[in-house]
Image 1 (cartoon, rainbow, N blue to C red):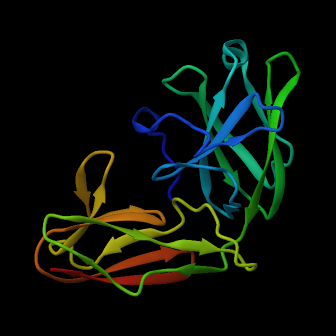
Image 2 (image 1 turned 60 degrees about the vertical axis):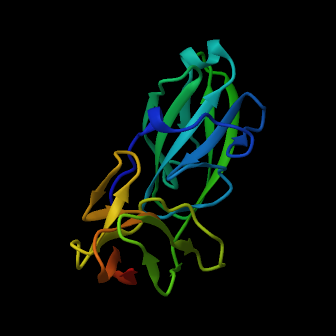
Length: 216
């Protein structure tokens, strides 16, 4: 699976609508995929999640440290400051099923906030039976990943996608405003190139999925 990438500069600021407050109210957490979302979904096992961490205090922001209580479940692979004040980004890898408490420290050994995040295995995907798009138009194709209990998972880069007829349809990169013949994720944008039919082919481990597309 492809690793999550930072595109922080182009993301909107965190708000209560797309963030989850820490237990002590000093930090807000958001998953970063096609858009910022709350962290109430388990992270798909075997994938990376990029998490925006918004630290309210300027002092805490400067010296912030991050730790995973159960790195065998969720391992913090990297942390980096964002372009805006108070903003950090973590890449967390879901290594095994379970729950881990992510702690934010003040740099002097004191924990200033925490959040519990879960990791869960993908049991199935929910895909549209087909998709239609106009020539020179874009349309969203949403795929949901669920665990064995039916809970929706956060899996922004779980599926690697290609298309059998890129001369008919391609994937739309909304960050760079351009088309591409392959991509990864569960929130796709497709772009109609020419009239005709094509099939989006996705691979997750040994699981293959597909979505027929008609460009009208």
